[in-house]
Image 1 (cartoon, rainbow over the protein chains, first blue to last red):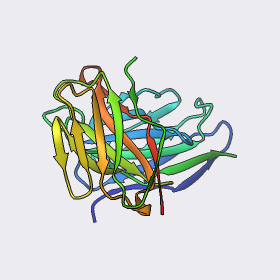
Image 2: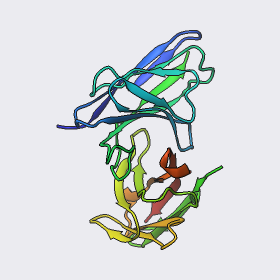
Image 3: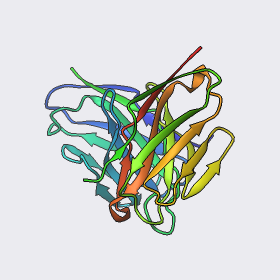
Length: 118
Length: 110
């Protein structure tokens, strides 16, 4: 059954601690994305990757880091530098059309990880 | 600053047609408009995508005027299960930036 799996569903972070959110896809998609969603608000792009070993900052990359060592995996680390990490984090993937990010390829989303501060 | 805007909320009754508009005055040339549906504590789900004029699938229609600075998602005969947040997504800034709309909370009542 193809799709995107995010884990864990709920995560708690202590002050000053780094935490890593997992995202795995078996859709054979080249592009992967991380978004942050705050209560009652829309999605904001943190990082995206069009190909293995390459990634780009989105609108709100400060305090976050990513890696893309495998096509199917795109983990997000929320570092201690992120002062307001409490949010709902969504991972997505898509094909890449004509070498361009999401030209006409819909994104497929996981069901998110809710991160809270202890 | 390019902005993609939608009405914050809309109310409807079962069986009615609902039209949700997204304004995207800085959409990139040759790029598509995509609409998603999101239920609480879940990821968004693809509804429909289009480039110009009209696109229809089994769940919705998408109307895009010639200038492509806006688009309208049309949901025919909504039911209670259509209560959700609806987002549009476009490329802006020459195609180098992905911008989700502000989202529209649709509430459907009996």
